Image (cartoon, rainbow, N blue to C red; front, side, top):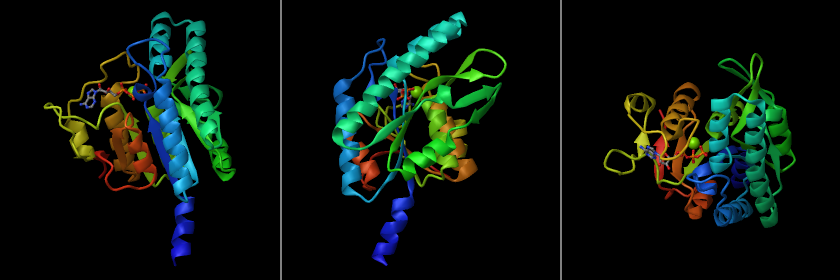
Length: 264
Ligand SMILES: Nc1ncnc2c1ncn2[C@@H]1O[C@H](COP(=O)(O)OP(=O)(O)OP(=O)(O)O)[C@@H](O)[C@H]1O
Ligand SMILES: [Mg+2]
């Protein structure tokens, strides 16, 4: 019986996003927090070694490797600026992957520009098989906020948060964790709201981000995760990933993980 349940757990898919607010200094341009990248990679490696979990999809935000560059593109409309944004986001992605590999886990990039396109508001993801096969091969696919080509004109921005929702619903995730540099969704008094239901999310007034954030910051994050809960019945937890013990707690199902749960 125990062996059976262990086997089932191995098949579960976990989606974890580490925000650009954690991995980079969002107030600057192309400034990585190398120590945070290292500590989080180590926490992921340890958690995977200490549990039977194999199927982890990692998403990271672009932080100061994407938002300021994307802002330049949105203002100029120049192809070159979109491609600079992509190259810059890839640079951060490479740092994350190298760091993970140093600690043991096998990780590979999935760059949205190479596998996702949009047609106006509709986003067409062509990366499901890559994610599935990577998981099957014991590899952590690492996705990131990026620019994507639009079928009609130019590029648009695809956030790490949108990728979390996509991966969670397509791969039928059993657990979704979203780490930022704050302890959860804060109320007007600065206290963490421990649980938000979709109808509550719709009524809340949340600010975006303190920094340049072209994808709507915390406000859009809560909106997207509330849709994931209401439309697909997949709950998520927002927690502080600057505290790397939280990353470990999330991956090892520690009930003491402090944060905001978004669920029906
Ligand atoms: N009500 C709120 N509760 C919590 N954080 C909030 C709230 N309103 C605004 N914020 C801001 O949202 C930020 C987190 O969102 P942000 O999009 O900047 O980070 P991120 O998603 O980790 O980065 P990236 O988009 O690069 O992945 C916090 O640093 C905080 O300053
Ligand atoms: Mg963000």
